Length: 221
Image 1 (tube, helix red, strand yellow):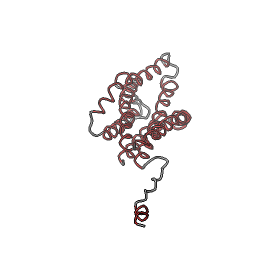
Image 2 (cartoon, one colour; image 1 turned 90 degrees about the vertical axis):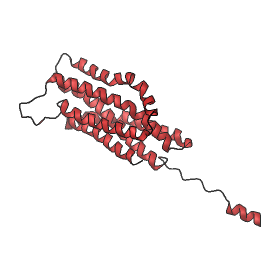
Image 3 (cartoon, rainbow, N blue to C red; image 1 turned 135 degrees about the vertical axis):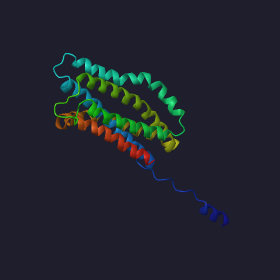
């Protein structure tokens, strides 16, 4: 009887309930990163189409401008990508790196909207930003935004390891990759209607807002 009572008293706990998004902290990280990834796809496609079809419409250098935009986005992958992980590893608070990268990305996109002449500036009806300046601003800000993005995914991966148990990390990585692939699928279908229905400014504002919302989610972790 004593042994039976002890067995009943020390019965193993029931396994914890499995959640679709593992836990609340991962759900916040996943939601924020999914939104910013979708915003990035909309941003890249919108800016590319806008330059080719509106800013450089009818110009001989239209194709060259689009190619330069792609180069400005790709060069940071070669220059910053290899060192981003090492820089993040040296930081004591990886979440803070992610938060700062989100805010800097949002600020760069917001600066791009007036600098590229996507919206009119309140300097009088006759004032127009020189085309050369607009192109330089676009390529420079895209370069900087791409460089900052090299810190986003590695920092998010480190934060993921901190908030997700070892056994659930493969599922967490799968969910993150699925949402990223989904953004690649749905982003192009949203970019063109946004551009031609509401203008490039709204499409870029959506990207900036996605970084702000992602910041709020990560901040709540």
